[in-house]
Amino acid sequence: MKTEIYILSGFLGSGKTTLLKQLLADEKQQGRKVAVMMNELGKVSIDSDAVDEDVPLKELLDGCICCTIQDKLEGQLQGLLTIEKPEVIYIEATGAAHPVEVLDAILSPLFAEKIEVKGIISVIDGVRWLNRHSLTPQIQQLLIEQVRHADLLLINKTDELSDMEQAKVSGEIQALNQHAFAILTSYAKAPLEKIRGLSMNGKEKKQSTKIGLDLSLSTFVYQFKKPVNKEAFEDFLRNLPDTMYRIKGYIKFDYAKYPSLFQFSYGMPIYLQENMNIPLNMVFIGEQIDWNIIEQSLNHLEK
Image (tube, rainbow, N blue to C red; front, top):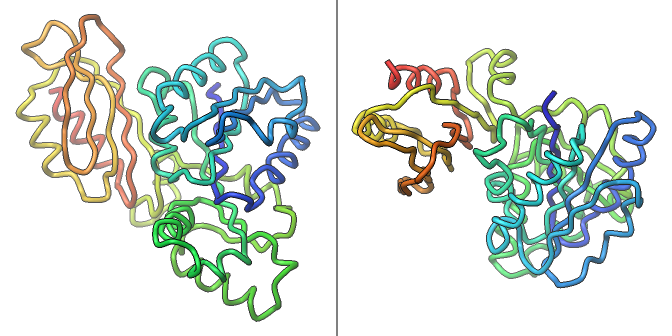
């Protein structure tokens, strides 16, 4: 059984911790073994009291999991998977985190086959969204990215909005992300069946999509069985769609004794030679990707 992972995204004060409390209460009723990772930009955790003492909690302080403390996240997550072996992990990202970068930080090739990222749940403060033009351009763009890359959108604090304002917020947010289900909420109370039904796994999504494309952000893990030709691999990279945001993992070339750690972002490949044999897992993160084509191309490299 893979460990399910849910990412709770959303700007500061939007209601992520309120949502987390409800999810943990439901998990307790279901009797599932759960763990939590909380990320704070400061040196002190503010929201950790929301998690009961019997729930394994890892706190990532004084930095954002998508940049300054990414290595720490990988170690903490691997520790949870190895020692606690939870059925589900909830990751509450700092409000300043970009959803794609959080996903990138979580999907380590070392344990990607042990986890199933169920989805990104973005909580949007409806009042702040209406007043977002008073914020800096960088924060406005972050709010947009947190909407655009979500699998489920909770438009929160709607009790503070008029019917006309609710319709305006809902319309603007759905126009940015037509593929995620959007729910108007107060106190982040969402129908839990919508959350449980999420799936980011590209292989699963293709079966229910007529044109064979994943219409939102999704992930794919490929395991190489043998060394490949480097020139052929780089031809494969050159033919990738622009919506392939990130690739990372281990690959072994036919001339090398040991694998290389491979990183790919914004079209730039980086290779770092390893000095030991490591499972040849490679993680892909993209949007509107037909993972069947990617898998066929990778299979062809190994022939």
